[in-house]
Length: 321
Image 1 (cartoon, one colour):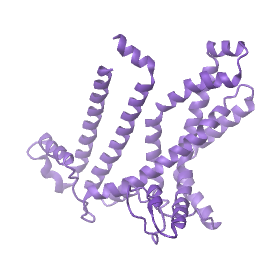
Image 2 (cartoon, rainbow, N blue to C red; image 1 turned 90 degrees about the horizontal axis):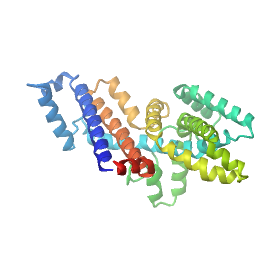
Image 3 (spheres, rainbow, N blue to C red; image 1 turned 180 degrees about the vertical axis):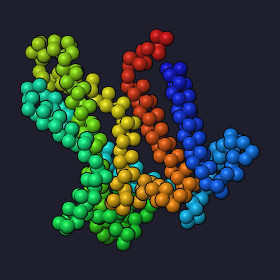
Image 4 (cartoon, rainbow, N blue to C red; image 1 turned 90 degrees about the vertical axis):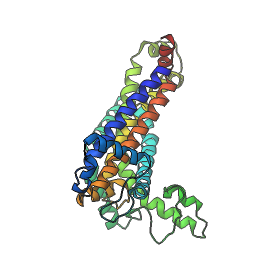
């Protein structure tokens, strides 16, 4: 177990080194930052890493604001949108995947397969403005831009309005909650499509594969209840495997989120990063790439740790060694 932990720490450190190296290379694209590379490239890189460890990310060339405060302001909205989308994808994707794998309903399996094939082929950066246009022209209340109406004052406790709204102590708090959810609905529904289809496909394929195993056939041949077989064997051997897909799903969701934030006026890191690219603000681009990479790396490390704790075979393998 200790050797596996050390191996994962080394791999995470190498990934973080490559990430900071890319961020540093982007920073040097600006002629004003060329002094970092003097007299040598790696000597400037060491100074850059030391400033990162001290929390000094520099300033934005557009507004002169400290990038540390800017990142802490734009990252939570993106993570909020991704977290809600992932939750909805799991909530609807897992049951739909199992429904599409019922052995006595082949028509349902074909319907589910066709559904996720269509869902995976829809570009959400094209779907988002269309749904927003339809919602706006029909007067739907979910056709909202931004996180919430700026007329409402929501104190920042965690940086996530969906959490902070419960700490507002005003007579019209119910209106604030309603407004936050209305702004969240449309963007979340659009963002949920792709991860939900991926989860449906994974669960269906995994369940079909398990149903061909001999121990499943033997359990059914012993006149064991189908519900018991699914609960004892199929669920236990498919849901833990879904955890290993979380880093890929999170990466997929956060990249898709960056594409639709501009459409819905969502004040997230994707919208901010695209504006930085437009303004050629290399300081902001460098910090934005680093922040997104660190988030993905942390999710990957956390999932690997959970998988290692849940996988008894992996534990026994290290104990035998």
